[in-house]
Amino acid sequence: MIHPNTELKFISEQVGYGVFATLDIPEGTIVYVKDSLELVVSPTDYLMHSEDMKEVIEKYSYIDEKGDRIISWDFAKYVNHCCNCNSISTGYGFEIAIRDIKKGEQITDEYGIFNLDQPMSLVCGEPHCRKEIKPSDFDDYHQEWDEKIRRSIVKLFAVEQPLMPFIDVATREELDELFRNPKSYKSVYALKYQKMPIGNDTGKY
Ligand SMILES: [Zn+2]
Image (cartoon, rainbow, N blue to C red; front, side, top):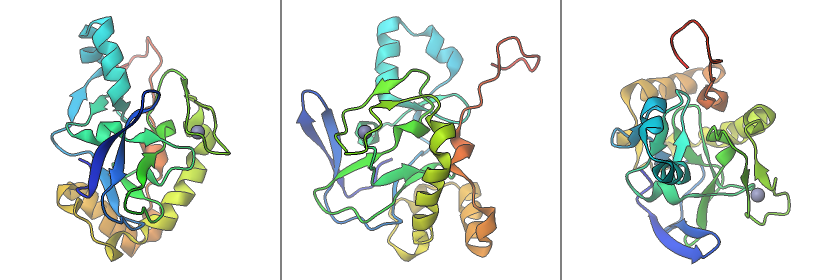
């Protein structure tokens, strides 16, 4: 579920749609939460779809730490990547604003965390654009992402959080623990899908 103070807008033929702030959203605000209504496409379900349908799923989903493809039921699925993003996924299953987002500004995030199995070319136009999202981004950048998250997550309880009611109880407890003991911080690396090699003996893949 995307933050209520946002709207969907058409950007261009090349980019398609994007999500924009309708009011200022301060740093530390939860801008997206994986709620209980999101569509979950398991790896087995995914294989049952036609090639055309798989393309649609790929376009609108991200892959979580269990390997499931998650498609938002609302327009959270239209948030674009930016190499200088203003929001980012956290190890707690929600995304937070990592700087103040102004009214009218596009909300962007980091697709390197989405466990893409294929490289994806980028058109974000930032001076330090990586040009491509690679499956190795998680390993190459997670420390940098954690630094950004840790700087902003300390503001979590200091700003208005309209999405807080949609955070599950277990995650709330983890957050309370984080504020009692900053060393309990859960790295964004927790979101990495650790694919098991084919033929392993756990019966999973
Ligand atoms: Zn870029």
